[in-house]
Length: 436
Image 1 (cartoon, rainbow, N blue to C red):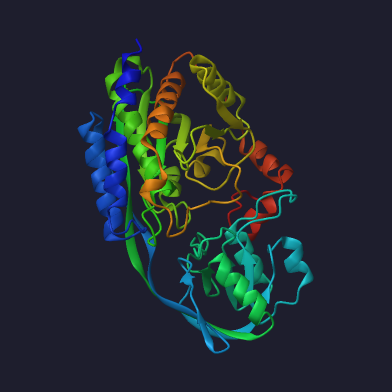
Image 2 (image 1 turned 120 degrees about the horizontal axis):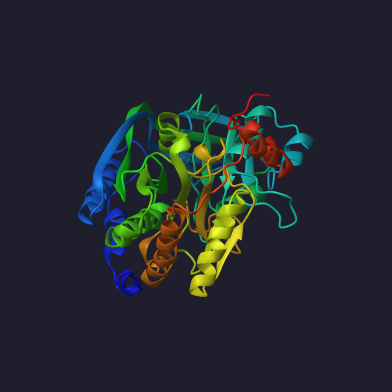
């Protein structure tokens, strides 16, 4: 009964698909490249034996990058626009706000300024502050521009979208700069006027989710998910070509083990995750939550050998991961806290059991992700294969009729968001879904 393990450990299916994805010129949400990536993922799922492989399209706010610059003194400093920044040109004093913690904004007079903040937080701080929270703190403080400084050295400006679900184009122009450019701006131009210029094409667009299935035709299903889109400045290998490669590798393994599945498994590769979880939000709005037994969302896998599963307070999900770890004598980290920043969240926020599957990391933030350095050679095929074995068996376990994962109420999730100090940031960014 273990022959399937050797098949996974010698499989090239996921790795070859990862290479296919990273070799596309772009997978930016709403682009032709994202559609090609979705089509090839659909075809790859069909080729490994999944049935009903299909695309489901939906409209999104399109955004295409143009030129951007920072004029400071007699110099021009390199930068990149943050997706969904408006096209604009503003001139105002630069204020270096360091980490850009909520209290930093509260203590500063930022009316009419251009604010620069770092992409990390201090090690002692109680919670992670997302980019979009810092951006909207700047907006509400009266800033007219936003500069997002990478904390990772290496001359790598970071990207990442702004905007909200209701207003997908941000209110003030926003750019990313490298750690080194940010240090130069802070040292030479803090308090001086700088000019921020962004050109972007804002237009209607379409994205798509990929769906396919294996196992019996049950009403209930286990979702195995990823997102196929990536930011346009790099290959998107870690974020999230690896996650989509993992979905395909799991599908390939389960096609050979289909008789072991007692519940239908649905594979979904979402579009437009990087611009606000648009594809998964569309799916969550158009499907029956009561039919979803559990979600295994792969976003951040393969970058390190040890899996880390955020379990969102679902004790049964933690127990399932512990059982698989014990079965293989292989470590799997479980994190019981909430993580509202990937494609599981449009479901988990309403109490649907879901994992966010990542790799362990001691770093704050995304590392190479969201930079030009998110490239293929930073990943190892061995890690993909090892993690695929564990996640395949975890999926089979969750699909057992005897395994019942208790749901949580939306009230419980909302309460945990308050307790874990996440609610304030979600309200600030327009992501709080609950009635007050």
